[in-house]
Image (cartoon, rainbow, N blue to C red; front, side, top):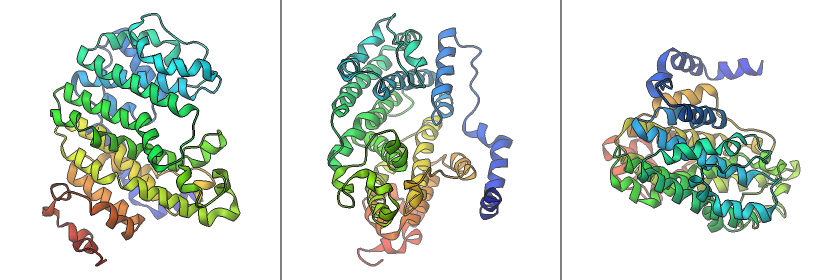
Length: 382
């Protein structure tokens, strides 16, 4: 009955799911021909599909040699992340592993066979991944090695300390996701599918990663608590509870939701940078690759906003909603409209503060922004 109520509440989801199944999927993510690939690359793409729920399809839809570079980049960072997540590795072993991980890219025989993590195959068969890494053009190798090194150092820094201030929250998210955005942007430019400014503007690329990571951290509160992990910044949650775990107690649900909403508001401040970044992209496959996760993220934040379920279970956007976003987020005008829609669901106060920062070229005067949000026509008039 619950499923029936969901369908009846959103009948458009049925149409969009059918449209997606009938060809909408391939219009956004064409099938990749793996038959022409060598054995090593085929293995890498198999690992990609096994370890990535979100990015496998969009990576495989990228154009030309960029596709292979991003696939290997993802697997290298997945291997690094698997080391960080593996609680069975003692700190005195893990810290030097993280610091030195980038050097293993140039060691043909290096592998790690003692991991207990679900994605351990990328460590156990790291020789295949590192071989394909060394087969990439040097310009791609340099980017991947550099980002892997910086990320490993950053991960090691936060192994032994908690996220206290909002500044440290940004710093942690930079290490684990902002650097990914920066690395990807440098790969886009190196492929010459995008202009050099895309790879050079690290502030915008960092914001792309921070927006996604903060969304995941906010949504995954309960899962992280059950696993003994804490990523919400103490500076924020300590105003609402003595311990972060107290927010999950039923008697604290009102203040817990207030804390949740404050963090969502923080994350939404990255939206102007996201739109500015996306407005610079020229290649359709790169645009889809970048835009789809961002619209999924803002839909997730809207679903989490004011939602007590964040502290009780899992909050997910509907499948019909997800496929609609995938099919629609194929140009900057559509993405702007999607962002406006979901930010408005969160509330005018957040909308005003976040979107007032948008530069005029990104807002798109031709869209008649004030017709979307009349209260944006002047300070304090909403």
